Image: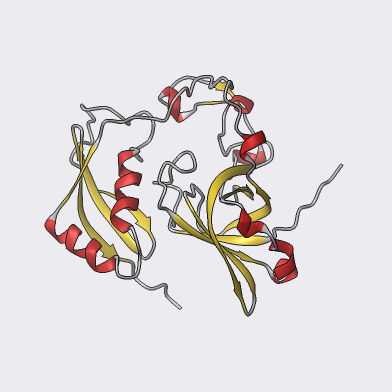
Length: 245
């Protein structure tokens, strides 16, 4: 039986590529996003009352996840197990699924009503920019929180023990950009503290690629950084070149 879904909107986030996105929501609490509804669903009455909730569930498509030959694997390697041990795909939140759907509980900062319809301002997102949103549901603490739930192989938030330091040029650029991007220092620190490196390299103080310059594309810039033992050092923020027309 074929099932067809129509996205209700597009999520605009600070994460411009998959590399560097936190692996769960709210690990970077200040990470902002805007949900802009498609014309068919951009109706003020459709979100009436939503502003009374502090958090919402987003149901979305992993639109840049491509399995080889359109196939899927029943076993995957979750980052929390170091990327080396396999478990069943349905025991993980991996984006490589039979149906590439995800869900995240994020903070609803405000509901803005614009000329073209409502816009939801969110934070704590772990979702790629331009992601199609399939549905929104209010988060209900009395039923969504299950105090005695078991956590399987992820009993607590990840702790990398990494320290984030900033060069003087990087800090100067951050302070300048914070005039238009609030909480930028906190956002960058949160992303890097969660160790964006592949799971097989995370937490390795003897990483053979130690000292190599890495980059993450955020907002309108490329973040340049290196790892030396247990210290991530931010080198600079380089403005992205405008796309060729």
